[in-house]
Image (tube, rainbow, N blue to C red; front, side, top):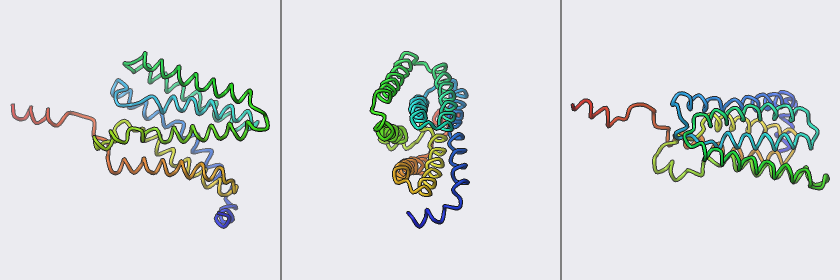
Length: 228
């Protein structure tokens, strides 16, 4: 890693700027899913987890920014939090299971409140490392969450419902932060993004193996009409 870090060192500022830029860009990936929801007029086949996960993740990163006293992290995650709240509102508006969505929103709020409360009461000397570990674990959970339906994906031979824009943008983001971690020789950042990159790459491979079924008229219905 040291040899690669030496090679990339002259490009530190460029890599850092690109990493920040694609991170902000990733926050807009949810708009593509919202557009799909709008076109079909419902949330059928689309889960709320990417949006609620985004809300919780930005809240935790916002708290971490305050711990580190990093203004850039605070500003970026305030923007991300606002965007994800809008995504959740759009999802709720088109959902036909509003009680279930309310329950999921309540659970996300409870988890966020509990973790923020922990950060406020933890020993200041330990909170940076421990809270950072919690954020990392939650990030791995979010990235891996689309794989929880792997059995169904294999059975249906379709990735319909998997958030492709979020997965693709997440792959780009983790790759750039991996390069930046190598430049900084930060093993924690490198390991974090290597795992994240592997998870993202494995999900992208599913789109190649099991492409989403095209939305449109059912073929059986078309054939039936032709025989009439």
